[in-house]
Length: 308
Image (cartoon, rainbow, N blue to C red; front, side):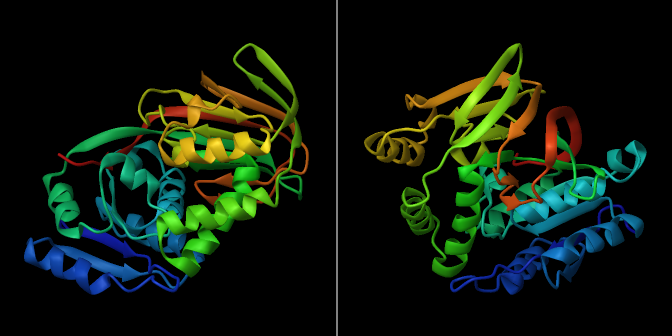
């Protein structure tokens, strides 16, 4: 395998306005003289298998043309390999998903494929952190899952799932936010939670928690994925007027200014209890953990291609 040949995994974007960007991406790659092999995922469940195939076939640059969930699958594949193998591989992204928040953090835009390919060609690398949630499954198995962006516990995990569904239907980012928020108003709920953050014990009813290595879909806007820390935003149950104010601040990128949001910065969060709360990892719902679970950060562990 040529050292400069890319392995590209194309993940089709689904939905009413999903379209097919494969031809455009290949045209940009060809025009810029990139050596590559491209495979297309049949469905979300095939991403890990195809990334593992690329790793086993010796690709040293693996590009995910997809969204946050596909990137999540890719980093979890990398973490199944030895440190020596991981250190030899560069991971990059061409935004092409329902949600592209980790790509957007770095300045990659799904509408600017030519610029993205040009940046990736320059090969500028930043080692990024990975968060890790360790939990026990319903079968009593000890499991873990890595994440680039965030873990959501509670209402926003449900909303992120609604947002994904509404964006698949509506296609537009802002419109999906509005539709999800309207649905959230009719699903207002609290969860009994028992959390340990730094030296503080929080035992009360909470609406949602976001634990972010990166910006957490706007809920941990000050987080950076290379400082070895997790940002945490706890949201207690606001009144209806405050709920609309919170949505406005969320869209303006000033989520932490809301009076019901309580921010923390830590290296570890222990969740002793999160009664009936859904859990989402990088925008995708996971099986609800049984009993307590722990979320930690592992610093500068993945070689990620960033803009120059």
